[in-house]
Length: 87
Length: 409
Image (cartoon, rainbow over all chains, first blue to last red; front, side, top):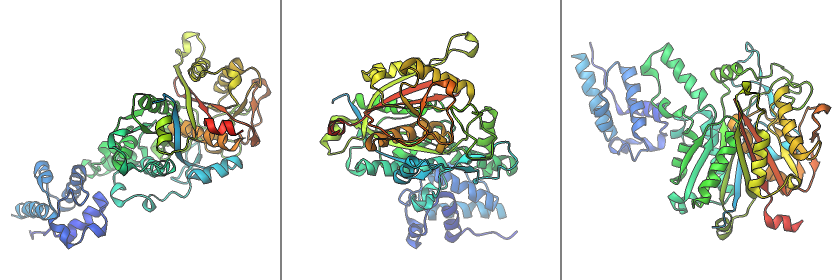
């Protein structure tokens, strides 16, 4: 099974749908911005995680999800799960 | 603190006009907003008319971030709250957060949002249910979202007592102001025009099944046979009169009196208690029936309930003793939003010296009411607003025109 890779562009699409974040806050420098500064509260993060789970067929641990502070950290968690699922 | 609580700003979302200006010009012209349901296909349901708020595009008024987490009623409430605060000249960012409270009424919560998530649950599974369902449907959500958006950290509450709740929430706001909170945003915005909300309302057995908008909702008419539901409502900024004066705000009128009662069980043999609610409100305002210049009635649109309300009015005011109107005939019944919209209408009526009409109705002579069926000029110093909720809630509120304005006349 080929491993899917979850990119910042993939996350951008989900953040727009799940949290209504607009393009102007989702520039390249948002990769290392705190979710809080992007206007994403904890429930929005849960909704984001839930959409990722659905689309990628993985399960994300709630506490590691809410523990991720930036888009980069979330990408790492998701790609880690994708790697496990493919192994 | 004076103990006198005034309304310093307001705005509305009404089926016959979005925003105060559109609403009021339509209302004084007798223009109805009732028409065929357009928000979903109601052709297969027994009832097919509603009062829908026209021209509301949430994206034009709210940041995208709020859209995935809000029902239509909350989107309307957030925008109307912005307008009401602007109307009152309140700059929330420059006001201490704990000096501003929110007290709204609700009757159903975010039904449309809830229906969509329940549909996702049964058709696709729990993973497809939005995390926002945890609060987006909830009765208190309008209060919470208004509080968060505007940084209003004073007391927040919601009252759920069906249509009467629209007055009960404003009474709660008055209580908070009298306890020392300088300013409270209050009123109610409801919207449940979706299949789930429709079926829930049909189960109460009070919806009109007539498809002619001019014949469907006829309170105090011999042909009364139910009501048309609607969406929307109004929000008011209330504050202590002296505090409002100090910051240079104008008063639209005073929340002068309030009374609420709950009816005895239907099989108890004891009469309903709307009359008592009116008497409590008059006493609370320190006035007698002679002082009331007009009544905005509940206007259930069902023969028994209309008779009961007419009886309460004639017992207090005498036969034909006071002009009575039901501007709701132009909007349908808006649940918890109805009475706040009537309060807004009554304040504007006092400002402009005009009683808005009850449209489409030929008053039943047996009810002995002076029903205002054409817009009527009148000096209005004091107006009584009534609201009843399903299963026995009765509330009455007395509004008094601003003192300076009364002096002008």
